Image (tube, rainbow, N blue to C red; front, side):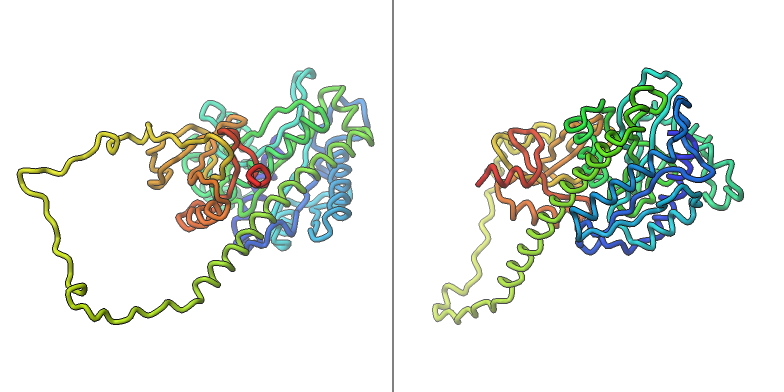
Length: 411
């Protein structure tokens, strides 16, 4: 990912911050997907090995258009919006306007990678977030492209990409959609690895300026390295472009199916609870026995007999490990780049916190149960507590699976 790519991400996600009325917020699921072919027109992007006339802007457009066709043919209820459909220049401001006007539920930006060593290869999906501190220097260098923009001081409100202090607090607002972004990114990497047999370089996070401003799940996909001859050949071929587009489509399909299932169950459960609450409670008849109406006397312990506390009641939070044996449901509430202890304030006092480590990220869940409806209720409660991206997952002897898989196993 070069400086132009990073600059685009910065401006795009900054603009997304101002679009707060997305369809995702009304539990409508994945209804509109914004597809962005990286670069274009005067911006060629990555030039690769220069053995081909085509460069990054051409490959990203070809894959993006194929992906859009797969979505339209197989997911007719999903609207596809492109930031560009031809090899033309589209200003960063206009790209953001297109996405915001569409009120997208998922943003996918498609790019090709490059490196100084031609042996480096593989696919990466990037979610915008705070990375490990020792890697922040990369983002500082990449974000320096902001300084090339006119009026950048006012546009970025004092953000200095060369000052590490500017990066403090970038993680404050990103949690709302980070869970969904990571889940989708993981689905993309799974398809690349298992179905197209590409090298999986994992899901990465980058602490870019507007990481915390995104108002919808969003990923940037690096299809491969054009500086690697074999991958450049593959990505320039019709077969390679079709394979990569179909892999991304399958990830979208699986992600959408999971979201639709969770929403359908949430609506069903809400309807059931509304029906139950609609019943008038039975009025209690007056009790003819006056003795039964007397308030019970409070029984106080004798001074010489202090209340006893059983030893197990003093168990520390570190010792309270969730029982993950068998197939169960849980609610994932956070995805973080560093490990946290169970009593950390980030969990807002929630107990029974479990941890799963995947692709260098730490995912935290709570509310283990064998009841899907209970898990749904917990998810709604967690969302009300501020964990906006909370959703139901499945666990099979501690290994994370989808809620759909867990339901099938428990039938």
